[in-house]
Length: 433
Ligand code: EPU
Image 1 (cartoon, protein in one colour):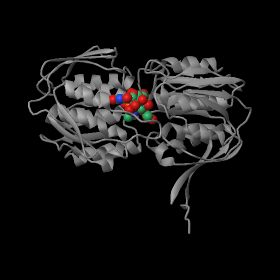
Image 2: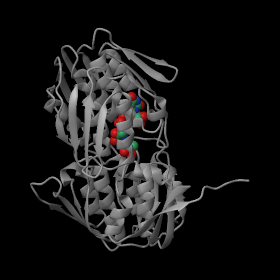
Image 3: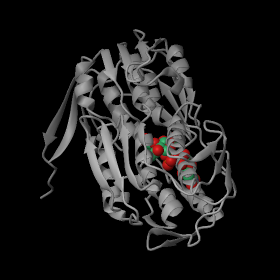
Image 4: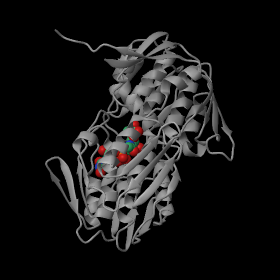
């Protein structure tokens, strides 16, 4: 049996929705707890499948795990000597598993982490992770599908300059260098809010990091770190998903848990599309957020994805969806992942008119899409197809919901709360006699 989301469109989303912690932060925060023996507690944890995978990975490394999905907390008891091997069985389920590499080499001076393969959005190299660790003094080789890293005398500070501000490489190298001897300078680092969150947690654990939120981090190694209680930053990609869903359906949605400063270029593009965007101010981070009032029909927008503070690649499917129902011709240029177009083929099944030329998607808006059966190829593509189904007339069936559930908590419930007609339905697998 498999599950599909069945959407009856069109829908106009309206109401309030709360966004919890960022997938792409919490997984790394969990990995970072490996740097200090003792009990760390992370709060504002989203109830998503990837958190459960990271719990299992840390459990297999010898950590005690107490995950309360309802309360949104995970307590991790890190032993004095955690294991050093992350098996392919788990790594293949989730690329973010690679983020245990830096903490393990930093603290245990050794790690064996399966190499995650490419995936549906592109080849996704790891050369910067490997090269950076080598510069910090580790020997890193690829053996039988595993990165095998060792630094018997510990890591030592060095100067690293990343050829591209890779999110994952920045995180791994910062987590590796906090316990290194001496000073590590990392130039051209990624500045995503999730990186800031990880650096802030490391500082709360006793790390010495300067330049947080800039392109240059200076890490002065310390002999040891202590466990921590830390609240994960809100998920700006999930917040952006709701914002685009409101704009594309002509809805009125108030998003809590993520403030507009985490979505610098996104708010501008929503306004260009004809939406009104207003901040919701509160001292309480779970309430602060913003409201998006969608236009009756969006204007097309031109977007180029870039590292933060540029427009996030993870919101790309929502831009294409919005342009697909806009009044005119829009353009999306993808600069981070070469193969993020599988989504476009599926969207075309709903009647979207998209032509791809290299890394550009030219979209000619139509006044209505028509519901169809489609398949999610990754988390954001899946959520994008759901949003497209909300704008379309009739029934849309999205399969591959496992992808969506890796990154969106209680998605069907939240959509229903906003007035959409969406169900999660069990379907028999196709059997070829
Ligand atoms: N790259 C290399 N070599 C490296 C590292 C990266 O060539 O050593 C290339 C990649 O192949 C890719 C580009 O650099 O073309 C960007 O990769 P980056 O390392 O910045 O991304 P990532 O750490 O693999 C994270 C998020 C992605 C998000 C990107 C970009 C996590 C778990 N994943 O991936 O999120 O798209 O940053 O912002 O943090 C998602 O949530 O759906 C998702 C795919």
